[in-house]
Image (cartoon, rainbow, N blue to C red; front, side, top):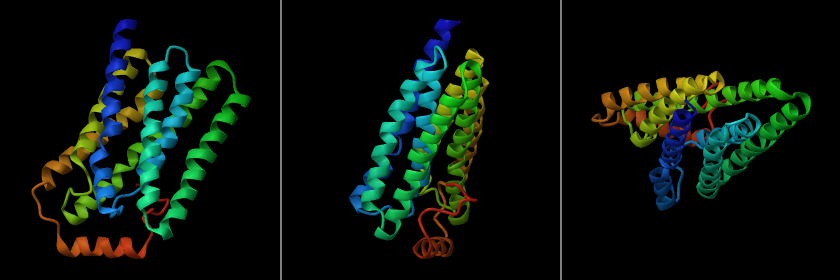
Length: 238
């Protein structure tokens, strides 16, 4: 069983690496156009926070180094993506984006790690850290909900890349299987949700990928993004 868990974990690392690299086309577009357009920085900020916390979980829990390794790679990719956002985002939004990075990726992550390290020990610490990781993981997997809303509103999949949706599906599937084999419910919960969201996104992609975007809806979306910040309200994580 241990060998099977290891093999699934390695495959999960490979799939997750592809998932972390899947936005490369999006960021090449941002660099080429020198604009972040309608793309949101929130998913990458949340993913970086999530990766930092899962690194700590993988280090804290015995025999979970594969969780730490893939999230270490993920943290590096998200830092690069966020730096690109900070370079090409509008000056008005740059400070707000940097503030959010400081609050979530530095402040919250450091507070969570320090709190659990000094307040808990042994299995209790593992459970508490895992619970915090699950909460942040749900935020990460909820991030695509805004993209799904945009798809439905504009009837266009332009801002919901297929590769990213497919990567979310595969990533959730492999790590859900890993959690079942390792009997780690704390890993299974967020990845099970990710699997369901990946399926939902691919269904939407299948429905709308041949549609031309509705001009009125696209214009309204563009106007809204010009008059409001790229970062949505807290009650609508994206």
